[in-house]
Image 1 (tube, helix red, strand yellow):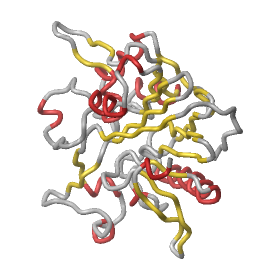
Image 2 (cartoon, rainbow, N blue to C red):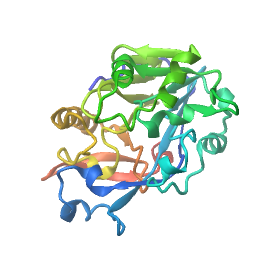
Image 3 (cartoon, one colour):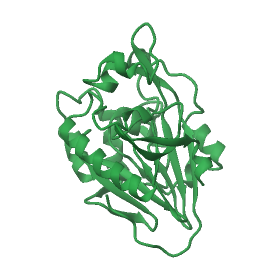
Image 4 (cartoon, helix red, strand yellow):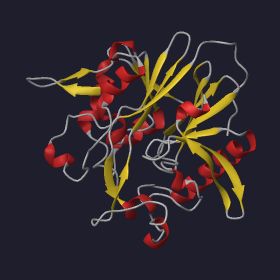
Length: 290
């Protein structure tokens, strides 16, 4: 895990909002972990689905307003969303408004990866064909590894990498391909991971004397903190385990705070050491840690 170097004092504000809840198969979310175990942590319905959230983060610095991920969007039809069972949440523009921003205010969008539930909201269909940018003044930051991987696609992920979501980024002329770990701006860095999908970005934010890790799909919920509790969606499970271990050990040692993208019950937590390994300690809302 890379630790941010000290930076000059500057204004920063962190906000989080849930675009929407959705449902996925519980077995897919926990891979090889038996339901007899994961069902003690997360409840499922009669169809074996569990509820997840879509938490997006807004980072305001002295001169930047950065959005992390933009949810599903609405470019696909009813058939596409039939099994997602979207519910709740405040929507993308509604969430931004709740946090005090308009879409035009966003200067940067960090896309953790190009699966549909993370990038689809950046562009919307327009009557007669084509798309419009929801964030017309924003630069889009995507790792080069993920960009090349998604555009080449593969059988395993082709249902998640949708051309109508990906093509507009290139056409916008505002795409920045991130080559390696480093800062997007002072206080905001990105770490590139490979286990879930090649080029997954994990944003790391230094806020005053604290460090926040937006865990994304590497550690989507509190239940996924345990090293072996990983998603069937991960392409390289052993790499996921190694990446999680590095981040969790660093976070435990330095009291960093994890922000969860898909946990409907807890936005954040600190970590604690237990006889079974690193687990969630005090958990709560992002505002509790600011």
